[in-house]
Each structure stands twice: as C-alpha cells, then as structure tokens.
Length: 218
Ligand code: DX5
Ligand code: ZN
Image (tube, rainbow, N blue to C red; front, side):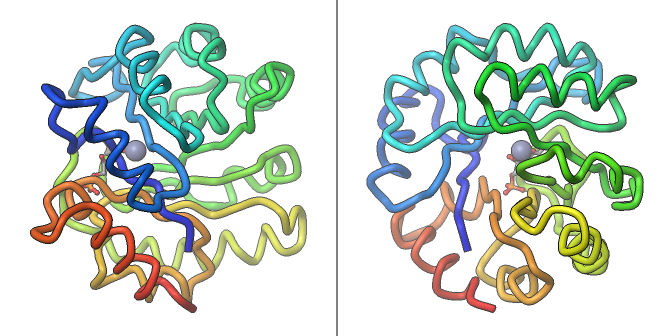
C-alpha cells in the first residue's frame, strides 16, 4: 500500500516542518487538498503556499483539486511539477479534454469520484488515466467518518481497470486509519490518503505511516 498523508491536518504554523516529517517518515506522496469555497464549503491553499510545500517536500506532490474551475487551477499548479493532479468528475464538463491538458503538461492525470458517483461514470476515461480517487467521505474537511460503501465501489472499479487499463491506480481518501486499511487493500486499493490519522497519531507521523503500511497488506 502506498501512503499519501494529507497536509490538511498539519500545523500550518509549522508547515515546512510537518511536510519534512512525513517525507522522512516514509510516505510515498504528499497529498495537497485545494478547495475553492464553491465546489466544497471550505477554502484552503493556493500556489503561494503549495510552492512552500513543494520546496519542503522530498516526495512527489499529489494535488487534489476540489474546485469548479479546474483548468484555471491546473495552470496555477503546473509550474510546481506535481506528480499527480486529480479533479472531480462532478465539477467538470469536459473531463477528457482536461485529462489531455494535464498529460500535455507532463503531469499524471487522475479523476476523483464523490461517494454517490458510480465507477461506471468514468469507464470510457480509464484508459487515459493514471489514477482514480474514490472519496470515502464528502470532500471539504479532514477528520470525517469513513463511508464503508467505498469498499464495494473499489471492487467494481477494479473490474473496469483490469479490463481497460491495468496500470491505473486506485486511491481512497477520507477517514482512513489502521482499522480499515486492510479491507481497502483487499478491495484492490493501491494508495490511501490519510490526514488526521497520520498527523494526530500519538506516536508521531512515522509510526502512523508504518502502521498503515503494515496493516495495508492484501
Ligand atoms: C477531504 C480531503 C482529504 C482529507 C482527509 O476533502 O480530500 O484529503 O484531508 O482527511 P482525513 O484522513 O482526516 O479524513
Ligand atoms: Zn484529499
């Protein structure tokens, strides 16, 4: 299991320190939640702060857009050379065009599905994607309760991926902890995002990442 801690739960007064801690603690990606106050009822960070995150990070950035104007935000963040940019299918009229644009910027394109959106909605986009992110909470906030139907959604998505693009990864975001990561692995999930579990772990972020890796074996 690959681990992408969400810096939304970091201490923003010590952001560089908290980004370095997860990178040194063995994470695989640094998950960056960008919210615009329109698509979701919360507002987070823009390119100035994400630039500081990129400078502190020694692992690739995974930028999760929760915004209405995706193309505008892709242009804002592309110069920071993230590994992935993911955008919500519910917020995009022309997902195929946006995938091509992200790819042309030498960034891996990913699509995010809210808890109500069936995996079948992106069946004909799978061959152009490097990752699909299934939300296991409603996007907008850290620290919410895991929605278990994501397990069935992951199994159904895996069927489509095996048929159409076996290299495409499945990521799950929201309420992930050492208690559910094993079930996610068994459902075929490759990458988990975890914010509050990692940053609020009593033994520190490195222990939290290690326990997600240990429990996240299929
Ligand atoms: C929610 C964000 C998540 C969030 C996860 O909209 O996309 O990445 O930070 O936080 P936890 O792991 O606390 O649910
Ligand atoms: Zn996220």
